[in-house]
Length: 295
Image 1 (cartoon, rainbow, N blue to C red):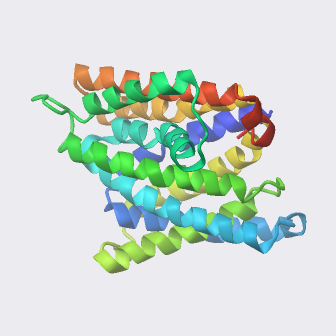
Image 2 (image 1 turned 60 degrees about the horizontal axis):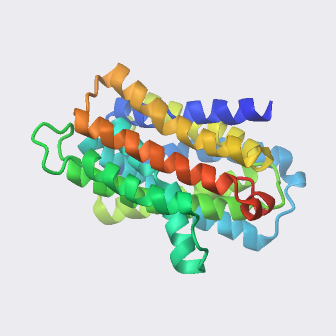
């Protein structure tokens, strides 16, 4: 049941880019309403189970800070979709696994395994191919800019996942940390919107129907399933689930929007998936990481 919950959540999250594209709103508006529509629902769920949430205040603030990173991640990721499409943008944004490994190496002195050292150049070559450098027929309005924005989103996504995971080591009901993270995402996207004037506050149909589906499906149901399941799963299964979402999003983008990356971009996408999978499996087989944090 735990694995089924995680896979269901990952499949639901894989539709996030599709729902945003169908909403046809600017990136900041999409990021703001994805979190804003989810917030009251999460508040009600948390109020029902608040007696089971005994996390200290510092854990709650950590979840809120992680949510700020999530808000910035979503805005950058949404922007990259406009330039490189739903599938490739989502794939590159999920290269956060590589970024976490590099950050642990540079900031914490955690020497990477041989598998990670091999994977990093593979991913870099893959990203270069996906970006369309030197390719006349590369898919996307501006694939180089889109790839850069998606990689920037991956940095904030990595910060979110690390902070969100650390905010709930007590394994409290996932609605609590998710509520706080969503509040942080609302604040971040609102700040970006106010500074850049990008949020369209007037609801329109069917755009806000798609945004509501995005908020309730991905931000509430999917992340509650994932938040419950990942700390309880074996690490190898977690590593596999990491690859489900971007792979499925590429399939949905091809089927729904007939996105057709060039052969070189598809080869690059395959290299990124291979590299991310190598790092994820390498982390999963690390006894120390498994003991401290299966997620």
